[in-house]
Amino acid sequence: MENISSSKLFTTRQGTILLGVIAAVIAAIALLVFLSQYRSGANSSVGVLVAKKTIPQGTSGDVLAKSTGFYTVAQIPKDNVLSGAITDSSTLSGKVALADINPNSQLTEAQFGAATGVVQKLRPNDRAVVVSLGSPQSVGGQIVAGSHVDFWVTTSGQGAGGVSRPIAKLLFQDMLVLGVSGGNVTMEASPRQAGQIIYAATNDQIWLALRNTVSRDLVRPPVIASVTGG
Image 1 (cartoon, rainbow, N blue to C red):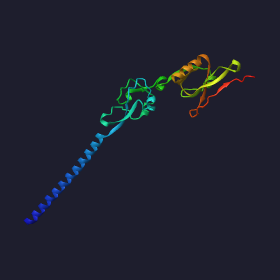
Image 2: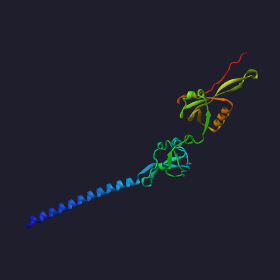
Image 3: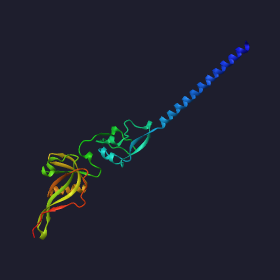
Image 4: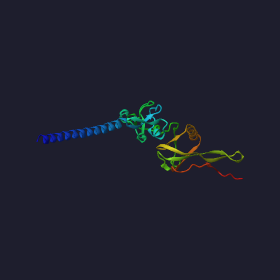
């Protein structure tokens, strides 16, 4: 009788120990999984736009989005990512920098606001220049902001024997229209183009020809002149 009781007791103790070992193994596995997940979360990073150099106040977000000269995408640990940090450059579309942004700063949504006016649409080295045109010269009012146009001028040239004759000359191709107000058309131009446009507006007559965005530029722009008799 005593032997049977001892055997049962031994069996019970073995079962208890076995259950304890199993519980300890399960707890250890759970702890390892938790630590692995914690470390994975702590070490994970996010690709954030970071300024490479000073971004001046008023800089167009559209310009920034098209060029990586102002920013780089840096992997920042999650814990160090600022609230509202920008991870996609398309977020900048239609916005401008509200204040100067220092180099090595994370770009955040709070640093940018809605763009107003033409200047925010300009690329870094371009200018906005306005010409006043009549209806025929502006394609009957069909030119709008975003249109692409060829820039023609009618002026006078020297014909045979030094006789002055009228000519039409294609001065620029594929110019972007930034805005239209009444008969005033604002175009994006380089500094040199702006000067030539101002000269043409003062001395010649300007005509704009509407084009589509996939048209190819002419390799040899034409000069149209009147035919003189012999």
